[in-house]
Length: 131
Image (tube, rainbow, N blue to C red; front, top):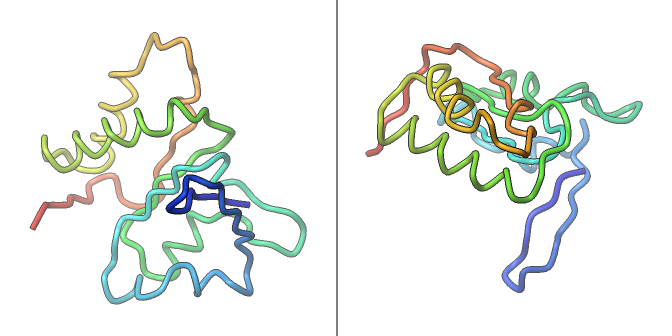
């Protein structure tokens, strides 16, 4: 299950499974984006009959890379990690693997260890630029 907040700040839950995945991730094969799964355990296998991990599925659908987590993350770490990761990736200009490592290095020593759970699916040499 994955959730987002609606315009009123209320949680909206999504059950992403093999039958509805294309509805959430359309045009990946045309655009080859980075998919950032900033949710708890967003790379792990789901319940029986569901996807065996969102990272491989997104790559198979055409994403150029997928960043997700192996275990639960905290609500405070998720925005901190995302902000630093995209700063490293887009403003510093590091390849995705180096941006991920630099982000983790910047959060070392943090009392919240959930930064350890972020991982990359795809080539670590992939680069992204702001247009």
